[in-house]
Image 1 (cartoon, rainbow, N blue to C red):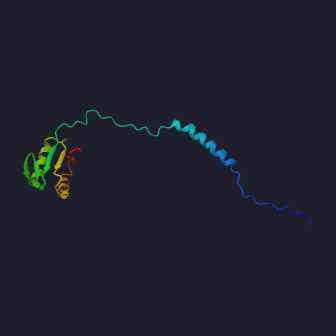
Image 2 (cartoon, rainbow, N blue to C red):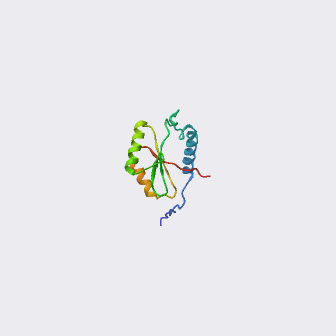
Image 3 (tube, rainbow, N blue to C red):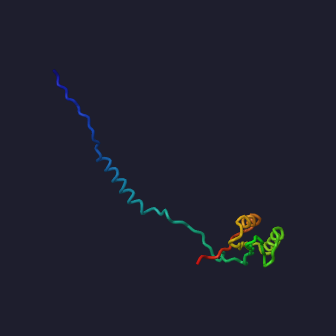
Length: 128
């Protein structure tokens, strides 16, 4: 009778080579990490360009929805014509809408949509 040695299956993994590889990778990353500059961004310089050459055109929208320009209540077409003539005189002027807080949102959006070919902004009161 021949004797056979029965092989036992190994149910364990030798992790020492994996630990060695991980330590080598850790050293490589620790050495190369200080050499990279991921957060450096070259920002454009701005000189005096932030100052506006002319005061903006202010359109006031009252609580009842009436629009005023320079203290005169104007209809939509009159308002657009007046704004166009003022912008043609000074093309770099912006338009600011000062709307009452009780005015319907729809009226302000409609006015902004009518003036979309110009630079339009909203005038707000800073919080205390």
